[in-house]
Length: 269
Image (cartoon, rainbow, N blue to C red):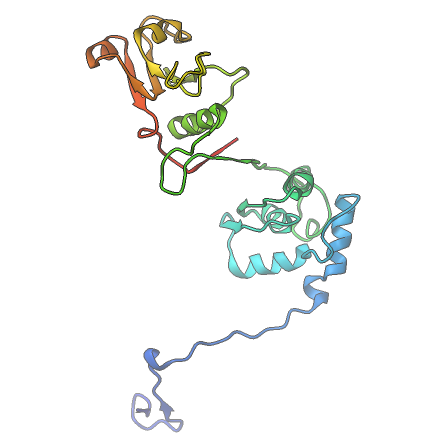
C-alpha cells in the first residue's frame, strides 16, 4: 500500500490510492460580484433593453459568460429550459454558441424574442464590449402547437384540422405548413402533393363524411398544382374505398388516420 518510488529509495513515500476507493471531489471557488456582476447590475441591463421587466433578480450577462467559458466551447449547444428573461441565450449568441431556449410564460414573446432581436441587431449592453459583439447571425422562434396524441398514443379526440394538418406536413416534409386558406390540399413538396381528409374539410360534417377517400371525393379534391393528370399524391384519411389498382393508376399513396400519422407528439407553428 506504500509507493517508495521507482528505485525504492524515495525520500517521500506515498500511500497508494485506487479509483474504487476515491471520494468525490467537490470543487470550491468564489466568484466575486466585481468579476461576474450582480442582480442590481443585471436589472439595469434589462431596463436598458425594455421600459419595464417582471424580473426582480435577473442573472447578469457577465455571470453567464463565466459559466459558458468554464463549461462550453464555441458552437456547443446550450439548453435553457426555463428561459426567463433570455439572458442565457443572449450571452450564448454573443459568444458563438448554439442554443435552445424554452419558456411557457408570455415573457417569451414580450422579452425573450425582442431581446434576441436586439442582440442580432448589435445591442451594446452586458458583455457586448468585452466580446467585441457587433451583431449578426439569427434565430428561429417557434410556438408549441396543440397536443396531437393522447397518453396512450392514439390521436386525441377533438384535435383541430389546422393542428393535425401542421403536424402531418411537418412530419413528412420537416417544414412548417404555410396555408393562406384552409384546404384539403396542404401543399407540394419535392413534386408530391399532400392532402388531408379530416374533420369535414370538404363540407360534409357527418361521421366519416368527406373523411373517406372515394372516387367521388377524389373528383372534388383540388388538383395537383404542378401535374394535374399524373402528379404523385399522398392522401391522409380515415379509410379508402378505392382498391390498390385504382390508387396505383391515380398515382396515390393513401395513409390512414391515425395509424400512419407519425412523428413528434406536438407540432410547431
